[in-house]
Length: 541
Image (cartoon, rainbow, N blue to C red):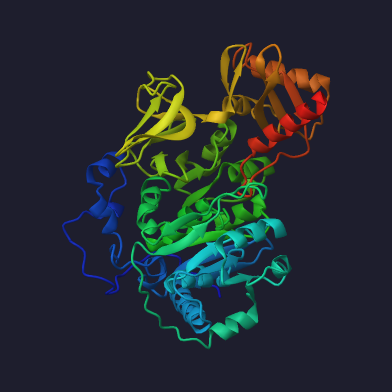
């Protein structure tokens, strides 16, 4: 179905008592100062129909909004476009909730969903949560081992996937596989479109697996229905979502950014979303940004870098007003290209799985200046600091560990950073990304940023490797169409040393065809470190 009405409208169902009219509506404020002046937990809850005793993510995202307004647009890699209204998704997800009940899937039991953005994805994801079941979105590029490990961990009653992916689940005992094809959608049409969610804020809504390897399965992050309230902090101050936006997030909804920031949060505010399905193509994405009239984009740094490297941006015209990125630092050249291309600065969103989003650049705030390379400033209601190894506050511009105040003290983020005199935070890499060589402390992120400025460097990753003389030295892994060789290696070393300091450059450089990445698209330095350690152990034997 294709629908041209892409404006955001909302209205309230009688899902709970009318909210206190005296509580300020946080979506009415865009400035940094107003954000901190008006933010309260009560004001956050006032954005929703539900409360702690009666809350359902599916209802908040679909049921309470104008049924005739487009909720989701999907840009397919093959050039197709699809669009579905809030009404279509509300009714279809209700049908899937009834489908689960009829098949005996009880509240609290898991329903795994291994689909690209599509009508079946949205119906099953939200329908499972409406039914009180636990939705488990899974990445479509998992292999059989990756799928089996996660299925063994969460024990879903059924897996909804495509015919192409279904063989991956063959032989998994006790798992029913449902093929999300035309027959499945036809079967859903026989179910009632009426369903009343009966969940509380404390009921489990979703299991989400982080982007790890099959050798070391990450523990599932378990989200309750009240997580829709918490994520609104990231929506308001990280992506800057407000009613009237036309929002796009190309990240897979199997991962946190694409799922929570890119899908749940905007829909909960009645803001229509655009998603991307299939193999990523930067030109296809930019065409969707143009054709859909997108005004607000939130993507991974890699997405912006790939758009820059494609050279195709001049073909398109954009109407973007807000930009944000997350997942990993964005190199300065890509940040500059993004601002030049779209006309607004790209804003950082920083957080971790354990503590949520804590630093942002407040997209759309006229009184917040975006500093290049900065993570931004703390979100309302959060107290942060940078501590040294002894747990003492670091002076301005001195690198330490970013920590967050909790009731029982300071909680470590395991990320290094510094604060400048204006209260802006800057990332200095993960704690295990710090390289100490001959007494000098160096940041892998900083060195990578310089290497990416070289015109012949497509991608770069930096780690510390063991060295008998210096303890550690910097090693870089470079992807380049130019190829390798000693002359290019020396050129890159001088290029880096002349821009940072004479000791701060990669003493070792390997030219590689590709960098290892997590399924979410981040460079996986741990894989590089593990491979280097294994290589050293082999050399010693």
